[in-house]
Length: 250
Image (cartoon, rainbow, N blue to C red):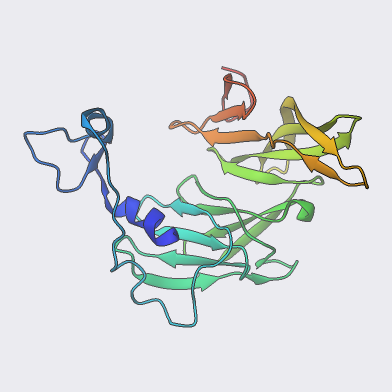
């Protein structure tokens, strides 16, 4: 499955204006992804050359995430192996880095990845670790950002700022209530602040002999704007809030 996702990056190119285009698009026809989408169906095909030089004893399993650096390098997290895979822009396997553990350079179920200021790979880990790990783009460990609270979905913004969600919850009679609080941390200064809080209510069904069934699963979702700001939304609302990297609502 990850081969298919990775192949999407090979189907994209950038024009001088920065608009994504499809490689091989006819000059007289639609060139941008938006134009192609409006003309009909877009089909992504896996590129079998991707990862073809990956050693036989290494493979992707479990959940993972992808980040792409400005030079085209692709980073893929492997939550089961507690490591990060790096590929060059052509899909050639370069290296792995990270190992299971709690110390500097160690990782525990790495998940979301993003690129900070074009220099650092921001790695989200298991929420209970209460931290974010930073590596340079060669895979060398840089630092651990300790948050002091459950930490998930870290998103690199700009100027050393990283956003993340901290979740806490409680169970009511007919609902599971999750409080998703969004923070922005400056990894160099260590300062962090809360910028918005969302309450997610998921109905539950209690079974006759005990136990519960969660009827749905809502979440707070973070994204990065093109300029390095923050987008915050929830799966239970059509509203999106836009913040600057310093946490001011725009």
